Length: 264
View 1 (cartoon, rainbow, N blue to C red):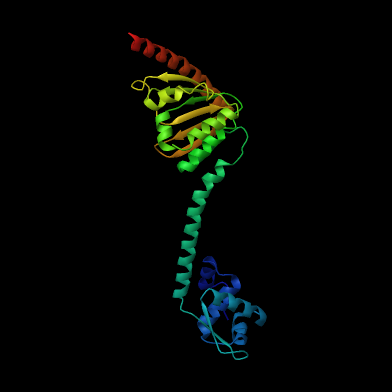
View 2 (tube, rainbow, N blue to C red; view 1 turned 180 degrees about the vertical axis):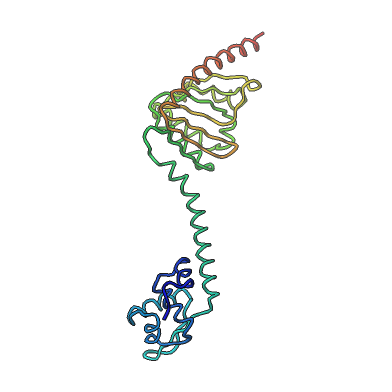
């Protein structure tokens, strides 16, 4: 009779065996090939339950079945099978851990917790398009730092349609733009694209990511890292709007000084 206070019994329980599975498996190891009746007697478990336990152990590859009822016999497989089973379980758990590690940041990005900034990340070109789509929900003029060259180089077919859709929605934009060829071409369409621009000298002020500030949100499109970010926080958005107004004032001054220099 198998003792439930034995070290082997406790160890089997600790690696995932149920109490009855441990009793039946240990009984089989000692008995060798035996019928259900003998196994039930030695494990002190009723015969009907032993059938279910043996089926469970067989499904795990720990028990083999031979013959036919009523002479069907069962035999324990090598204990090496337990090691294989545990290794497989560890591999599955490691895979689940990796999937969970990837999933948690995504779940956090949609976790609505009051009084705390909400941050969402979007990867790749499609992700960047998605953050631009969010700017089309703006209820006020968008404040933007925009490098038109970087934008059009990364998403050449997206922006012509985007400009038309934003204008059709009646969403205005103010943009600080480096004075490269693409920027100069874009500001020539300011009127038709509902935009007011401040053109800053590229050699003095250059930035690659685009930053849009609107409502309670800050959108960042990183062209080099192919990453889109939306931060949703009234406090942070208000601070960024204040900083933008300071930047806008300086950008207009630089634009004016540059224009005067070109005419000298």
